[in-house]
Length: 181
Image (cartoon, rainbow, N blue to C red):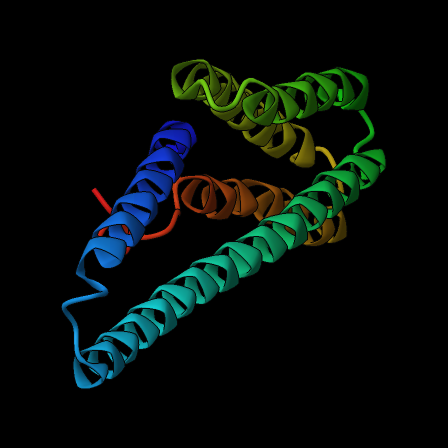
């Protein structure tokens, strides 16, 4: 996405130089009224460009802050669910192992970016581990008091729900209609 920025920068510099050269050629021929009109147009163009840049950075900042908050939310959801595994009498050790593998896969999703194909591979593994954790936890809850299910199931559900939120946020960028082509 940012590969075109150096070329765009060079083009801007080239056109600024070209504009100054043409302005130097036409300076003798222009009247004062034409110069004032040109300055007004230049000012308006620079103001619009500044506004576009400001909106782009504002959007990027808000997306960055949202992603950072979602990272903390996901870490807390996984941590809470992991701690609540202690409510299970049997099979908790196997589930703890799956939680560690799940956490590694979730971190790997973001480690391999911007390679979306590799990221999707890790996401698929994490989803498979999520399903295993869910099924194993439900099976283990059958041998526990109902209070354990009231604590563990919502924690697991939160852990699963945040992955969808983060997946959507990962693919949310500045709308293409705003960016130059």
